[in-house]
Amino acid sequence: MRTVRNLINGTSQDASSGATSELIDPSTGKVFGTAPLSGEDDVDAAYQAATAALPSWAGITPGERQRMLLKFADAVEARGDELVAAESENTGKPLELTRTEELAVMVDQLRFFAGAARLLEGKSAGEYMAGHTSWVRREPIGVVGQITPWNYPMMMAVWKIGPALAAGNTLVLKPAETTPVSTVLMAEIATGILPDGVFNVVCGDRATGQAVVAHPTPGLVSITGSTRAGSEVASTAALDLKRTHLELGGKAPVVVFADADLAAAAEAIGVAGYFNAGQDCTAACRVIVDASVHDEFVQTLVDWTRDNARPGLADDADALFGPLNSKLQLDRVRGFLTRKPEHATIAIGGERPGGALADGYFLEATVVTGLRQDDEMIQDEVFGPVITVQSFADEAEALALANGVQYGLASSVFTADHSRALRMSKDLDFGCVWINTHIPLVAEMPHGGFKHSGYGKDLSLYGVEDYTRIKHVMSAVG
Image (cartoon, rainbow, N blue to C red; front, side, top):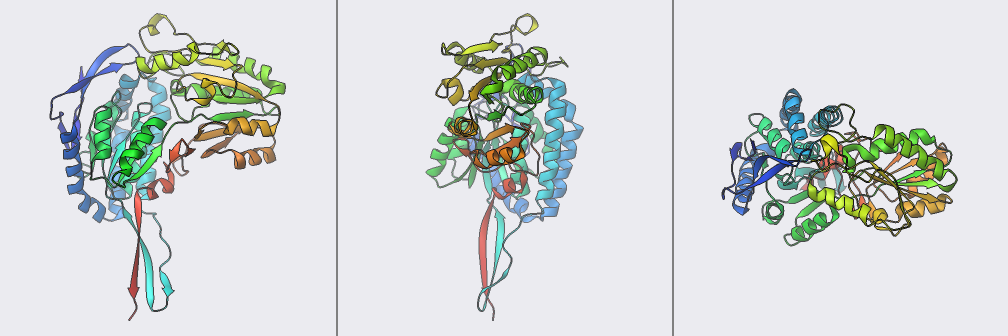
């Protein structure tokens, strides 16, 4: 049995109340460990530690922060096998995919943020009023509170801690209740590299998260999670005029025109739709295809899904994805399929696999056709291995269907017509648009959404700037 503990001021600690929650391996449905259920006293202790560490961390040069963050990235890479094993145990993800598609990427992102610490900019100093010189200081916000989701526990922790630390902030981070293992391990790895109190982790449930947000100390709170959770965070933060950074839900449209390479599009969509069991707010979950090739595309996608999109246990090298996060999430996704309207058809999948996967929270890769724009599976985030396919008559209808949801995080267009792709990229109301691909992310480019997908950017220098404040200094020239 694994015992997870909080990491506060460089020290592993139980919750002050002694309360714990069980951790369940979603591949088997069995308990494999416990984690603290932290209360307000634990959150307060973490914020006190972050407050005490702030002056020295914010006061060192960006080059010194870069050196420590690079050392931290090296340590994460060196203990990569341990982190991958912990992530897989906690989430059921395939080991090899986690190593290649997540660990390698997050180490690169940490190194990017280390360098970004030295690249923050402000307006040029100058005499904008006669007899006075003005300049801009870009400063850390101070202490920040952060909440990460359960779908990518390791990587989303990096997306939070990397820019916050690079900008000179200290932090208190709460991982999702079901997936704290890898985040706490990363904080333990940071011990001895980063000063005590700079990076604190408190584990717990929704009440713990509310305490992290409501505490008077942080100047900014950041969450990656559902739109509902983001709204609650923003409402609570507003009472104290805290800044918020919200990366929330998505319902990514994938527009496939008749001139696209349908086989290549089906493969790209299948990988981007089923990866991580579809538990990704940028997943290619909502395909909108030209009516003239609709049936051909559906058959191509179904064939690809049957041949390639197989769930499996962590050590299954041929598995494309693992289980859903919890029984609650499995039941939620299956509920969408159970409530499927009569005019829709499940073209493939929709069932729980048997055999070695029967006890876990697995669901077959699923394609649903015949849905209408106002149907639940089109409008709401399913967050499972489910891809829907609609059809359109012309470019205007394709755009209307794509934009006709409350979310605005990610989207893509598959076409051989570059001018059409550029028109669509301008008019798609989403923070990210891919052309003839879907889901690649790079550390240098921003990631974030519009509408009910939230605001603020992850990755890139824009992400680091979100963790800074701007101060104007003016001096009279004698």
